[in-house]
Amino acid sequence: MDLEKSMQFVLEQQAQFWATLQKLGEAHMVLEADQKRLAADQKRLAENQLELARMQSQQQEMIGGVVMAVGELVQAQKRTEQRVQELAEAQQRTDQNLNALIKVVDDVIRRGRDGRRR
Image 1 (cartoon, helix red, strand yellow):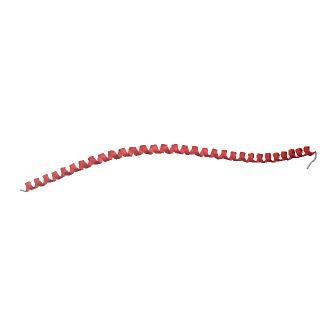
Image 2 (tube, rainbow, N blue to C red):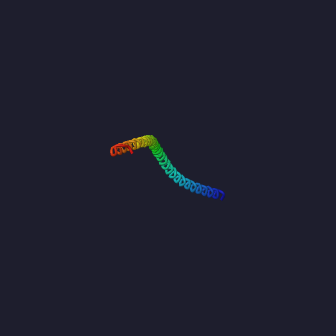
Image 3 (cartoon, rainbow, N blue to C red):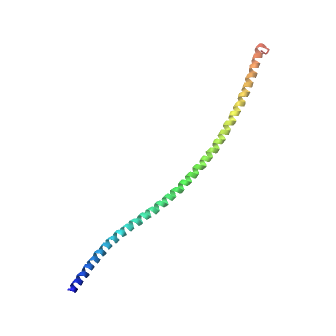
């Protein structure tokens, strides 16, 4: 009878071992699938990082171009302001000269009518 109990115990243990081994095999298959999915995700992330780095480099180049263009615009604006100031000063001189000419012409016309100055 002891032998029968021992054999029964061994058979139960073997059945439990196979059930556990089957569960471990199923878990291993799930882990392998997860690992493959994670490896694919990691590859996509690496590709996305490379693309982002490329885009960042392009943006930095574009920003550099914009900064240069703004600098050129600032210089052009300064030159324009200087020219406007020069034109305003020239206009003032022209107005003064025109007023002096008007006065001279007015004096000549008045003298010509009367022959004398009023």
